[in-house]
Length: 202
Image (cartoon, rainbow, N blue to C red):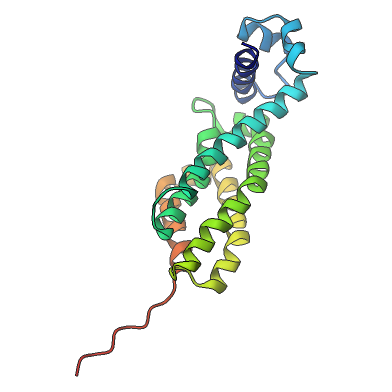
């Protein structure tokens, strides 16, 4: 019961923070939306910032759980890395409120997405390196290129997140999924071991 109540408060707070922003969400809002009294909320959280941190932790953990399933899957290293990068790319799209305008979102929720990304990055880096190491061990990934990929991936996706949040893709009528797939294909092709062409017969 305790866990369910706390989980409900986090879920309600997440929706309110996403739609109203943390500054415009009050403890009374959370109490009313969750059908709980303020006293109940203070049983689990010291203040609004404490709830906000729990929301960030929950969202980053959900991302990490999705990445862990891919890491532990039976896919070959190339497929595994492609799926891993797709989940990472979709982090921002999944977190964006669907019915709001871009500028409403930017005004109130940029920091939440940035914190989720940063916290998840810390948690995911070891898993990401393991996925890359599997590809190196199997002979699919070039060792030198693989050593560059973790920080390249971080910089690329920060840039992609920024373009997405600024509305760059929508402004120029670029399909988000095509951008995602093109970037991932480019990154993986740069990682693959180059095979010498088979010698001509005779």
